[in-house]
Image (cartoon, rainbow, N blue to C red):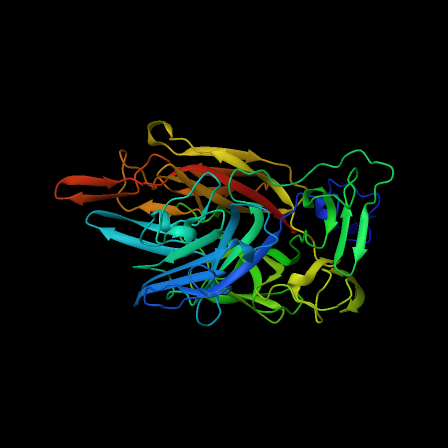
Length: 495
C-alpha cells in the first residue's frame, strides 16, 4: 500500500528511497509509533497511595498514584501503571516523553531548575527535573534489573509495572508548577533493545497474506503466512499504528509576542504536539543548548491552529502535530475503509476495526493526507569518561532525502549495579574552571547541524554535578547514577 504526497509522483514507480515523497508506504517499516499517552493531574494525597482499576487495592490495581509535600513551589508526585495498561506496547523499556500543561491548558516541554550554593550551585533544564536524582526519581527500568525506590514490592518490578515520578521541590520554572503531566509512551525501545522488524523473506506459494474481518485488518510481508505472522512480520496492520503527522514546520517565533500557525484541520486540544526551539541561524540542541541563553515558549492548540506565547528572545520552532490524542481508541462498528471529501480534497482513511463513530484520532491507521514519521537514524551509543575530563562527542551521520531532523533520546544510567532509563538533561555548573568544567557529569545533549545529515551526541561522564565553596575550600559532588549509554532516534518530519 502506497500513498504519495503529490499527484506528480506515481506510487508504482517512485523509488522507496524517496521517503519524503510518500505519505504512506507499507514497504517502509522504519517509522515511529506511539503506544499511548497517559495523563495525570497533580493531586495531593497526603503521602498515601491511591489505587484505581482492578480491585482498587494494594494487591489488585491498574494504577497507583501518590502526592505529597504540596506547598508553594514544592511538590512530589508519582504514578505507577500496571503493564496491562499497554496492550500494544512491544518493549520492556520504552522511549518516553513528558509533556506539561499549566492550569490554562498551555504546554511547556522543558522544566528549569536551579540551586544556589555558596560560590557555586547549578542550573538544570530537562523534560523532567527535580531536586533529587536518586533511583526513585528515575523512570523506566531496563530488563537488566531495577533499583529500590520510593515504594516497595510490585511497584519496582519491571516485569509488572511502569512507573515515573515528578519531584519539583524548589522548582524555578519560568511558570508556576504544572497542572498536569502527560507521559507519551512511544512504541520504540528506550534502551539497547533492537527495533522489532523482520525483513521480508522469499515468497512461498500457498501462503495467505491478507486478512480482513470485523475485528482484524492486516497484510503479511512477503514470505510470511498471515495466519502465523508476528507483528514484526506484518507489512500493514491496524494494531501496527504508525504516527500520522497532521502538520509540521519550522517557523520564526517573535520575541515577547504570540505567533500562530494554522494547519487547516480542527483537532481536539489533547492532540500530541512536540516542539524544539533554537537560535535563528544556529544549530538545534536537544533537550537544550549548553549555553546560558534559553529559548522556548508556551504553546497550545485551539481549533485548527497552534499558538506560541513567547516571553523571551526571538527564536525558531521546529514542531510536529501528530494524530494521537489522550482520548485513546474508541469502540463501535464504524467502517474500517472510508472515502470522503473534506475541504475540496478527496481522502482515503483506514480505521482500526471496532472503532466508533465519529472516529477519534487514535482510531486512524492511515489517512491519505497525513504522512508517517520516518526514522532517519537510530541506535545506541555506550558512554565512556572523557580524557582529561573533556566531553565526548558521538557523531551520527545519516542520509536525509529532504526531511527536517527531529531528535529524541533516552539516557541509560547505572545505579547500584542496575540500569535505569530517563530523559536527557543539561546541567550547567555555576562554578566552573579547568579542574571542574562547565557542565555536570550527567549532561547529555544533541546538536543537529543545519545540513540536516549529522547529529552529534555530547556527554560529560566523569565530571562533577556540583561545586561550591566551603570557606577557602572547593567542595564537589559526583553523581551516584552514572550515564552509561544513550538510545537515540532521528525522526524526519515534512519540511
